[in-house]
Image (tube, rainbow, N blue to C red; front, side, top):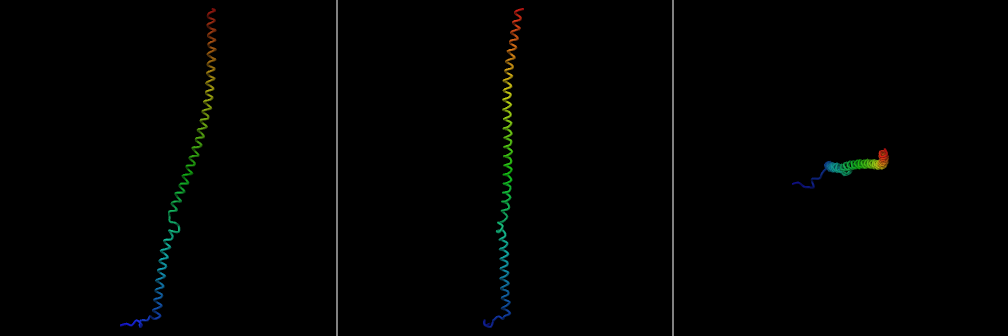
Length: 127
């Protein structure tokens, strides 16, 4: 049979086998690097979820500003209503004063009419 000692590789065969091993190791390294770098892109920027959160945060800020504007509008409306209520109260006071004055004029007119009637009756008795 074969004697193992007789199977000594030549320098040419040894060089080829070393080159093949280096190429296989290099291909394995670069394949691992490419697969790893593809995975790290998702980790580096924390995925695409941060964009959605930022968008929702922007919408929340917009809604908050709309609510604040609505509250300010309601406040100005309440102030307008309060001013209108004040004007109504002042008008009611003027009307009340006018009604009191009218009642005084009516009372005075009735007294004058009563005196005139009394004069008329007194004149009829004398005739």
